[in-house]
Length: 54
Image 1 (cartoon, rainbow, N blue to C red):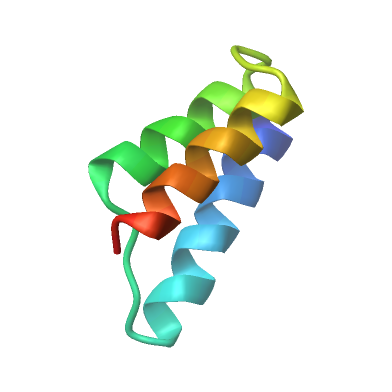
Image 2: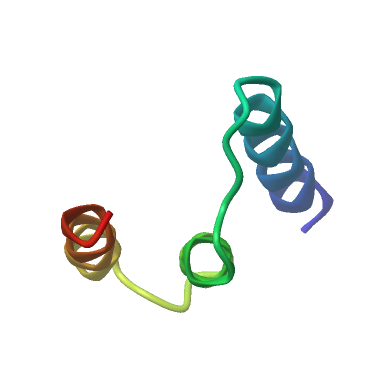
């Protein structure tokens, strides 16, 4: 669990360095995927849908 939290923290930090930040929805999708709460295909579908709405 600590490795997953560290990885998500790294993602957030890397984005912040570039001036980007995750929305609440984007953050939740990453958490759900990393915890096994969704399959990869569902993750990709949700990520694509979010990208279309940017």
